[in-house]
Length: 156
Image (cartoon, rainbow, N blue to C red; front, side, top):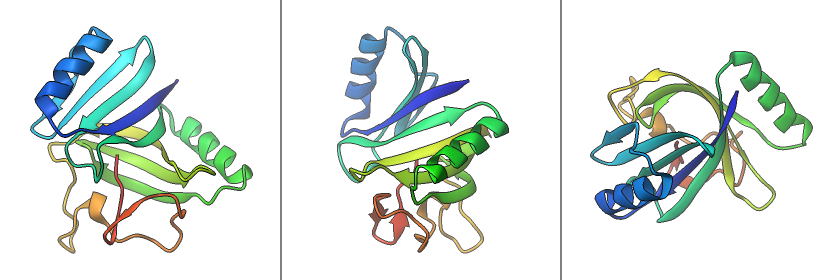
């Protein structure tokens, strides 16, 4: 099964949680000091907000899948659409361990295709070099529309 993913950067997490909880008639399934996520069935969306975005508003969009085969099929569709796909692979980001790929649509909007394996206790896990997984240096393979913040890729 596939679920639409929307990540929005917010200035005030508490006010935003109150607003989106009222809008969705549901409480978030995960809340942290800088992050909240709703897994909605109607509409079928993984909606996340955080104070970590470089801008307020829509940060990126995505499609979350449940099965490895769905992720591979999605990656293949992106490649056949003549899109430059950046396969990030396994990463810890947004309090979850996931397998991700990134692409930018023709308008430059960043999209992630991913499968979440499990929850994580950190927003991003440090790697042996001391950088966070979400702060890994940008790759030359990275699509031009996938935002680079300083020398880092945008994350979940």
